[in-house]
Length: 135
Image (cartoon, rainbow, N blue to C red; front, side, top):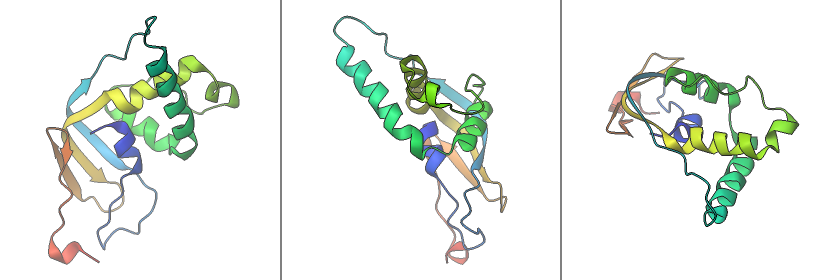
């Protein structure tokens, strides 16, 4: 499960108030893929990654991203994003790497509001609900 996915997930059980509170990550296995290394013929890919990060940035819940990244052993993100950072290509490439190349392979997502746990196995979150948990 990518950190980008974690950033948009919410608990849809009837017990949750559908707040913007992120799931707490308990990671037992994390995989970090190597970022693409810029070369003479990879400028199109690099440009796409920068544009992806730039257009994704306004919709990210930054505090949730920081919490998720920290739970997965990444403490390199700044506490907030300034307008200068939002236009810095180095920062945008690093943001793309964090969003797309960092994977929760095995672990648990826990709703901060209800305590409901959702296991993650082989990168797939099991969000199946019991009938009494549905709205």
